[in-house]
Length: 116
Image (spheres, rainbow, N blue to C red):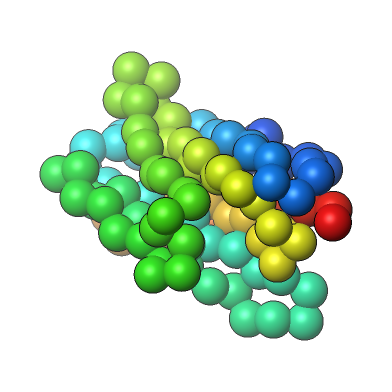
């Protein structure tokens, strides 16, 4: 059974940092693609960053200077380090494993709220 569990969200002041975690079970880092997405109120879900099978990393252009995706194979966990957070970063952040052999999986999401 594939499961993705996000954690690390919360309330932070503008300029602050948060690190989100996505603990995966049933699938392994290194042989699956993982991604972080976010959805702000009233907006479509958008891709934030991806971590490919061979460690290839991509970012949304507008976020690459402040956000960093990484993975820990020993913990089977994907992280999203977010720095210099702004109110526009307020959203529910979702972990996603889109191309597993069993299909496309999503976590339940974790709320990030940035106050001005």
